[in-house]
Amino acid sequence: NAGVTQTPKFRILKIGQSMTLQCAQDMNHNYMYWYRQDPGMGLKLIYYSVGAGITDKGEVPNGYNVSRSTTEDFPLRLELAAPSQTSVYFCASGRADYVNEQFFGPGTRLTVL
Amino acid sequence: QKEVEQNSGPLSVPEGAIASLNCTYSDRVSQSFFWYRQYSGKSPELIMSIYSNGDKEDGRFTAQLNKASQYVSLLIRDSQPSDSATYLCAVNRPNSGYSTLTFGKGTMLLVSP
Image (cartoon, rainbow over the protein chains, first blue to last red):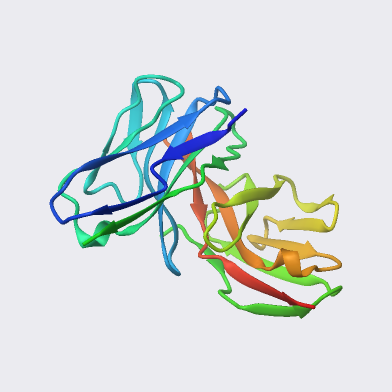
């Protein structure tokens, strides 16, 4: 199993550009998550999904959109990139149980200039 | 505000010593607690989960949970330089039938040879 995969690994955007961060998992997990991590600030939840077609906002959703058409994929869309979105983005997945263990992808380092 | 608090460190210990990492949380309804290890430039890796009061041991790692005091700790015995990393405490947060994780900002551990 590849686990959770993310593409691209690195990206530089200009202010106002848009992009999609890709996330896929092959563990048949129902739950998937997007986090951002800024230096010294910990992980902040952007959006999450509990199954195909079901998504919900996390702590910092502004400036982002998500969709979940399959169990495996959970892309994160950035519209009109801003310097405040410079961060490292992690996707995670987990089983649909009360325990909520989450397993992380390798991350995407995004810089907006 | 539901929070997870950790001392940012760095916590410096000599090789072979016991490293003790601490975490407090504010949401009394939390049921599951996790420790993640994050090497610099890498993604978080789940190393311990604990759900019941008391101790849980896995190799050199022991997680301790005290729900009455809202306190979770991680002990690393016989610390090695390869244990040098940031350790993130995460707490399960029930949320309208689903649950998400709230992360602390992490404690940096430095193990000197």
